[in-house]
Image (cartoon, rainbow, N blue to C red; front, side, top):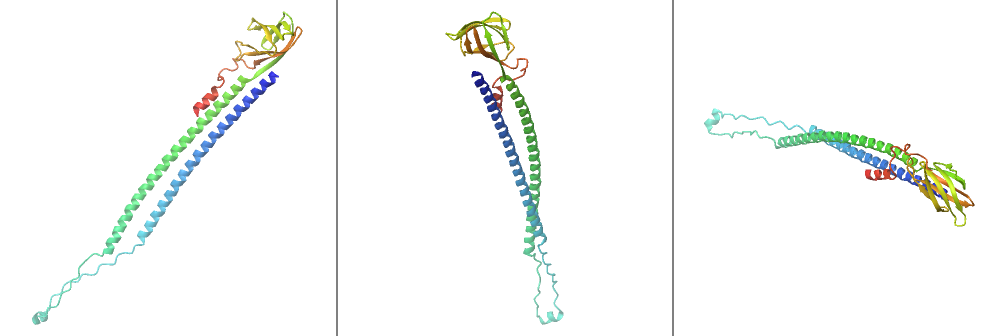
Length: 281
């Protein structure tokens, strides 16, 4: 029963880790999509402003072209000398002199044209500056997007490799055994076992175990009590459990890591991937 519970716990842990990893990837993808939408909105607003300025420039140009030309100035009248007859009779005729004065409407038109030209020049400079800013902003956004995409791809690749190694680290093999009392050793998985005593009354047993070519004695071990044994070439301890004790006979299983230390070279320690993920966030 303990074996099935252990296997179920391993499967549940793997499923939970997979779900957490999938949620994290989905959040990062949503964040990238939102950033892209914001950039598109900013570019659209800038284009709209450019179109508005162009429309205003066209309207001003049309208004300047439709202004009527000022009327011509009236001709100058030269004074005439009085005739001898007029001087003789002393009848002095008034001399009318036309004054050459400027039309105030022409001054107003010139002022309006100068103002329009100044506004057009300012707006042209603003358009050029806006286009430069948009081009620079677009280049910066493209660079940031490419950099973020590269970092995300590298992170996904590293996380996938770490997940595979962690799955290997958590996988275990189970070996069942059925031992009778004997001084001879029986090979079970990575261990060699020899049953020395089986006490059915007190429900315990004595066992001799060969660990890395060295004998280890386990005495008065209770039924279903796990015995943990560390080995040099395994990343995790080996678990030994006896779940049935008969007269001069015991039955149980050994749970050992499926991969040795050499197979897990470069694998992160348990929990290191989660710590790296939290640090990146």
